[in-house]
Length: 389
Image 1 (tube, rainbow, N blue to C red):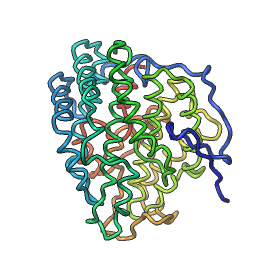
Image 2: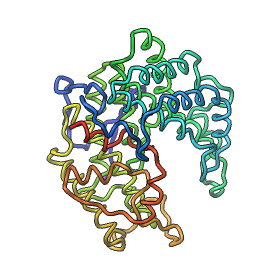
Image 3: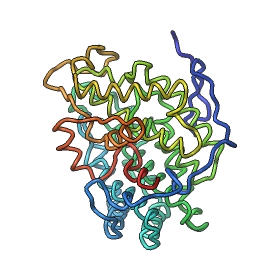
């Protein structure tokens, strides 16, 4: 069957597929949580995944690095190879900002909140990550050719706009969490900069139909965060409706995710990498008033995807028996990663809390995930979310 889609509202990056089940989310049915993911945040929000407490100095240092090193970060990313993004891809700067945003809100910490808002305001006032000489949009980056065209060492400038887009996504979420603490003066400086960053770097990702589910639920969290800081419930309703369609397109009734779950020797790893932000987004949508878990069509698919995760941890061969699909897979046993993705920090607690299912990952996940201070792909900590309920 040929899927017929129409693209509308390029600025919003919204794609509506005509053959998806047509359930529209009315804006009158939505309620915006005070702290973006919930109306209350508990004690678990005050420590990161390594158990470290909130820190004004860590937040300030991360914001200072973003401000002072923008030219160097962009230069490093500009010189990325297909396999390896230049520098650290900005992850080490955005994780302490995102974590401390939730911690500040949970602790009602005025000083930490002000540190974060002032730091983002300084970035915005200076126009950082907007006009640097080597900065590229995705359209500009693609003119240099496809990544991997000459192997993993092929220059891949597409990493530059993609990682800058991830930075803007994290800052959008951070400011959505601290929305109630921003003054009108803060908003006058911060919001236009975030909107421009969204339009330039995030909207193109939203407008691209990916083969599967990836970061921030295919950047749906970025659009929902923009709706939060601009108080645009119409945008929120369009985003949640679009995300439901997106999940129905990619999560099959069997629980496999197209194409995450079909990527050869790394299929299970990619399956869990996609399911983590999908389940995380479902939690947020529920807090906004739309329950994906109880949805008669999507709900069983989410549960089946969790069941397939259990299968992957107990019988990898049975999980892989479905075969491969698409052209982004490896059949080389040396590439095998038969474990939960190390970034899937929310998958285990959500499966346990929502379904009473225990997922037992392997040693690789346990060793690598303990080095992750905060989520890189899902926008919030599930431990934080559940501690406030």
